[in-house]
Image (cartoon, helix red, strand yellow):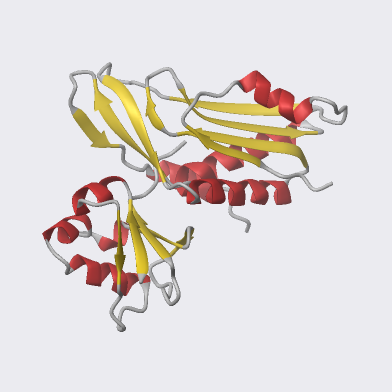
Length: 155
Length: 84
């Protein structure tokens, strides 16, 4: 049976253990599960929250396209991507990727690939809200994120 | 009519999230669309000052600036993405 990626865009938090269970319960052929969780980080002690804006419809469609590309490249038993939107405070979850496979190599690589592409192609934008009540700036895109995605290009 | 949608600082500078427009007949590519929009007033001039950095999606798929826009129902303009 073809594996269908599970992609969700939601305001609420997610439960990592529950998402792993959805990919593994009731089957005995999964030998490896890799999860990546991205959290809201405050480096300067001045951040109250990040506000994540997204393009409804395209966000789901683009992450599903990337997840399907991962399914075509690695032998996976399942793949999940959850991305939150709205106001997220430092320490809270933003994004989750889960990749399940028979062996660890495929699970590690697929999770890494999905995150690298998601960062440079999924239509989300972060705006800072500062502790002093002021509106901070929009987070700038990093060239290192484009470079991280480019390393997966097929030669 | 074509639906234009704006996100993040492009939306803030233009001052609206979306609009329906009748595109002039000589606007055939994404690049021509960006240049035409830029001429529509101060807000657009401010948002599209550097058109080369603006990312564009047609019918919810990424396209480059050479892409023809014929038949597009929905065109979105936004800054480079910063999700994840």
